[in-house]
Length: 421
Image (cartoon, rainbow, N blue to C red; front, top):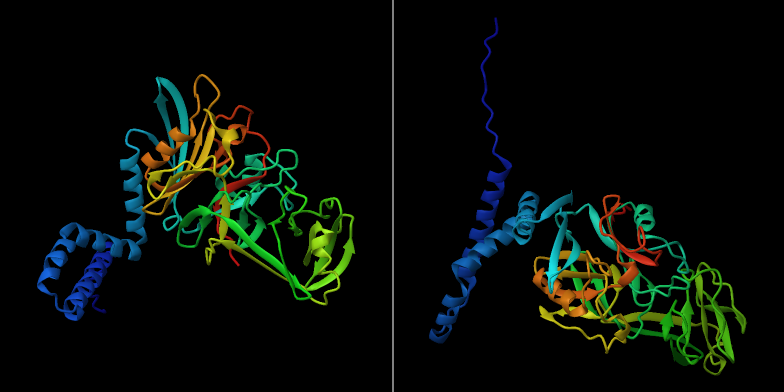
C-alpha cells in the first residue's frame, strides 16, 4: 500500500504581503534619500530635522499602503466617514459611496440635510458624471427618470437651466464633449480621472476662413445679445434657433459651408450651424474652407466632465461667496439648496438641503458655505436649488422636495457604473 505523506501548505495572508511590501517600499524610499541626498550645510540641517518628523513618516507609510492596497483604501475611507459623522445614520450605498442624513438647527429651527460622499478610488467601478434629460437639450425630466435612464445608484440635481425649454445655462461637458458653453463665466466643477478642480470658466472659441478669424461667443446657448455669434451642434436639436435681426446662418459639414440662409437651418449630424449678424459672418460665406477651434480657460487638460453652477461657496479652504460677480443675486435668502465640493482626501461631497417648510427651513448661501467648509471641503460650489433640489439614492428620493419627486429639470450629476469600451 502506498504511504500517504501529508504536506503542509504555508499560505501567507494578503495583509502580511501588503505590510511586507509597504515596509519594503518605505525602506527603499528612506535609503534612496539617505544615499542620494546632497550634504546639508549647517543652516539647512535645522530645517531638515524639523521637516522629517514622525507624523510625516507615518503619513508617508500610510499613503504608500493606500496606493497598493484596495482593502486598506476602503478601510481608511470607512473610518474617515465614521469619525466624521459620529452618531449619525450612515448607509453604505456601495464600496466607496456613503449616504448620511442629518438635522442641524439654525436659530432653534431645524434643517434636514442629505449628504453623499464618494471616494472614486474605492468606488473604482463607478464614475461621477453629468447627464442630461434626453438626447437633445430642449427637454426636461425628473431626477428619478434621468437617474434610472443612466443606471445611477446616486443622482443629484445639476446646474441652472432655462425653465421654458430645459436648456442648461452654463458650462456642461460630458465624456470630453462640450455640450454647452459658460454664462457670465460662472464657476464649474471639473471632473478628472484622478480628481477634481473648481474654477470660473471662460470660452475661447473662433472660426477662421478667407483669412478672417471671428470670435464665437457661445455654444448651444440661448441668445443674450443680437451681436453674438453662436454655434449650434446636434446636441441642441434638429434646427438652429431663429437668426437675430439682419442675421444669417451658415451650415457647416466637415470644413465646408454647405448652406447659407437667414432662416433656421437643419443641424447636420456631422456638423454644426453658426448663427449671427450678417455684417460679421458674410466675410466667411465665400470661403472654400472654414476651421473652428473650441477651448476653455482654464484649459483643464484631460478634463472628462464639467458641470457648472454658482456662486463659489468655498475656495482654497476659505468661505468665498461671489454672488454679485456671477450675477446670481436672485438666489439669495433662505431656500432649499444643492452643493458639491471635494476634500483634501479627494472625497466628493454632494449635499441636498430641504427648505420652505416648518420642519426644514433651508439655508442661506453663507450657511451653506459654512456647512461645506465644516464637512472638510477645500473647494465647493452652489448648484441649482429651490424646487430643483433633489437627491436620489438606490432607487429612492431621500430628501423631501416640495413637489413630489421634484420638478422636471435639465441636467443632473450621477454616480453610475463605468462604461466599458
